Amino acid sequence: MRVLLVGAGGVGTAVTRIAARRSFFEAMVVADFDPARADAAVTAVGDRRFRAERVDAGDEAAVAALLERHACDVLLNATDPRFVMPLFRAAHAAGATYVDMAMSLSHPHPDRPHDECGVKLGDAQFAQAADWEKAGVLALVGMGVEPGLSDVFARHAADELFDEIEEIGIRDGANLTVDGYDFAPSFSIWTTIEECLNPPVVYEADRGWFTTAPFSEPEVFDFPEGIGPVECVNVEHEEVLLVPRWIDARRVTFKYGLGEEFIQTLRTLHLLGLDRTDPVTVPSTAGPVAVSPRDVVAACLPDPATLGERMHGKTCAGTLVRGTKDGAPREVYLYHVVDNQWSMAEYGCQAVVWQTAVNPVVALELLATGGWSGSGVLGPEAFPARPFLDLLTAYGSPWRMREQ
Image 1: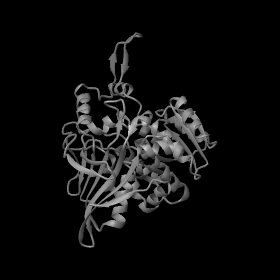
Image 2: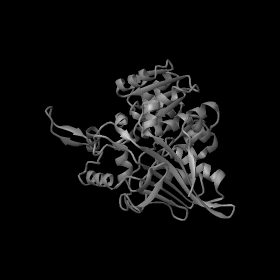
Image 3: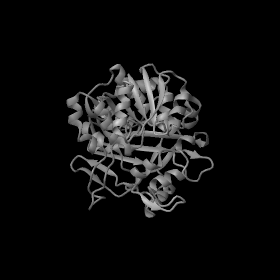
Image 4: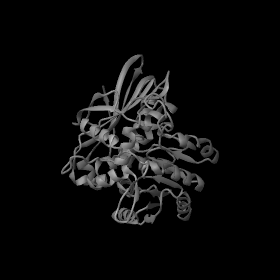
């Protein structure tokens, strides 16, 4: 396997450090708009299988040419969701397998944003599924931690733990703190704003997909391994759009443990229009400049990838499943916890980006060795869960299950 990794930020850098310990691939080209970031990621692993390149992720022709020049048969997208579609199309044009960790962007319903779906996450990708299947090429979408590992948990529950499923609910929480910062998100603020301020999507079997108001249906969930109770709220996320395509469940939700202070900050950004992506014109010493308010917010905050030395605590990604087994009610929480102290000591990566990055690397290894195979546009639920969960454990990062 020869991989083109596009994006050498926090997650992309973590991908290189995790992959460098494995032997399933022949080469990995690390490409970024900023060549210094790509060079730094490659230099840090000190492995001749890696090399750095510069590429604009929005330039489909350039990405396709890079795939062909290095004879890469897989494109792993580690950029933010704005670049999903150009990279998705570039991989298809080059006949390469495509893997991402977030899906094509949604657009709220123009008249009833808190009741009806407009363009859903992933709609643009699934619209091209027939073309990928006809070409015999795979696009594995939503293969990070959430979405990704959370979807694998759902598949495992459906295959081995339940006869009937009432609800699949993704529950994400952490007790992470960052020394010296009152507000320092542990993941891309651009992506966090997108998913938290868009109308959350809920799935119900007798209703299909529908939306609610941001931060709706608060509940306190007790997270394992010392994290403890965290208030979680509905957030737009790919699992709700992916899980029902392959798994029978009466209800699917995603709730994120944000905390009241984080929610209020996001509401203030929205109130001031600082969550907008359309450029506004601002004065500068060189004359008027068009900038995206959300990009300005991102530029004012610390890079999440640089916070590891200041960060303390654990992050938990998991899937809560309710249903019946052998005629009796059952409820389990399948989860994966990463301690920031461990990920920093072992890989030099903070916990959130490491937890996101390990899952696509596991998936690449399964694709390389034949443990997973397929064509078309498929989510993690379309593949057997057990090989993935066993290999994740072999990577030194085991998953757990708690009977509720």
